[in-house]
Length: 275
Image (cartoon, rainbow, N blue to C red; front, side):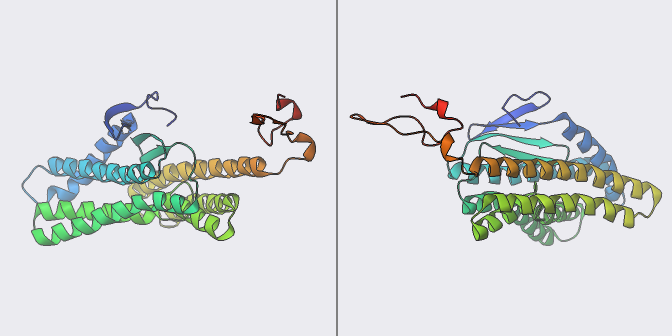
């Protein structure tokens, strides 16, 4: 998300001054999920199974939105600028401008999303137990299970997942080197992408179900690989930025009666300094 008016995204509202966006692919996936889940409710109740399936899918998307809003609130509490929150084909994404200033900020901003999903899961399990048996209890139980899966999957310690950012923060905290954390979490992200496809191939059973699982795994793997690769490129840029420059490229600071020159202390070439 580069800005609030990205092509291909629809704005559905604003929260705390931040645009909430959805991509058309979300609606396509939603329709597919309704068709996939409807038969599961068919034998449970006299209610139209597609109505129940729609309620489940909408509840799922609301849960994902709550997950992203948790990131938004934590980031804003640290004074970070959040450009937008987008729901898309494979979940959600909160665009936070810039990077965390400390590893603790990175850790808390990242872990709060899975924590919100876990809280929804635990709450939904409680409500399901209170409802006892019946269609409503089954729908709420399904929402609980999905949120639990979202929380666990997102805590895999590989970028661009939340767990990857948590892992990056921990490594950064231990080594005091952000680049090391990015590289470690980036490579775990790549390994996770490969592992998903391998797992789908190894567990390939019924032809129809196996093909569907493989396609989903491949889509998620592509997103993970691209995100991890982008993080590794970012680590390389961070390393170049943080690398000390030779003395010949440093800006002399000239002192005047009014104070030091506004020229930065270090620049890319001596010509950047203006006496």
